[in-house]
Length: 301
Image (cartoon, rainbow, N blue to C red; front, side):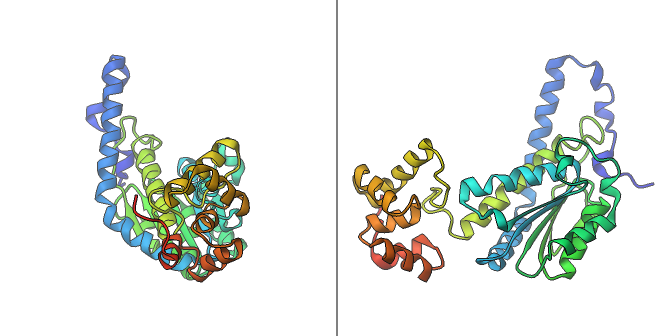
């Protein structure tokens, strides 16, 4: 029987339980570096996946994360950060976890083996051509995840498969396969280690690049974040101040006039009315760079 690379028992690590703690931790650290090297090799695949996602999401498409066990939990972790960081609408975010969201903290035995459940989840959420469905599985063979990605692909969605084993079924099922070949783990089959690190990195890079591509970042700043507390309100005011070059007091006034919306506040501080700022952003699909270019705002820093 062919054993996936992530399940191999490497001879180098066979006596690991007898090693001094310093040697063990040094080897675990080395494994994390190996994981990141594998991510670098996947960058061309990530470029293609990101561009495809940006092209279809538009104003209504959803980001859908599919997985089981560690992979599913990493997907939820990544997606949950998008609303506060980039003001991604919660209604455009879907988590499909084998065994349900209760499996985030309690293992649901056998849930990942149900291909029927993966298929049903795509039907339940009415996945379609404007959606981006990201499936994760270290082995690349999890029936739940593979079936979900196959179904989403058939329904016309942009499907991205992230796996840590070459020639995996998940990679074949996705329109945009992303292979992160992390190889054998220090503890055989414990894919929360190297494989998990690589998956987390890829997800962070992918979702961030998508948000940048959708115009939710300007000059390296989170101009579409949710200012939901005092710290974030201060950060929002600083962003308006930095981008427009106006006094901080004027930035705060613009934020108040914009109802806390940073993009609108930047345009207001650049000389537009609240109504004019909203119209200008609508005209440019929410792209602040394009809107500022038209009004002649945001002088070079």
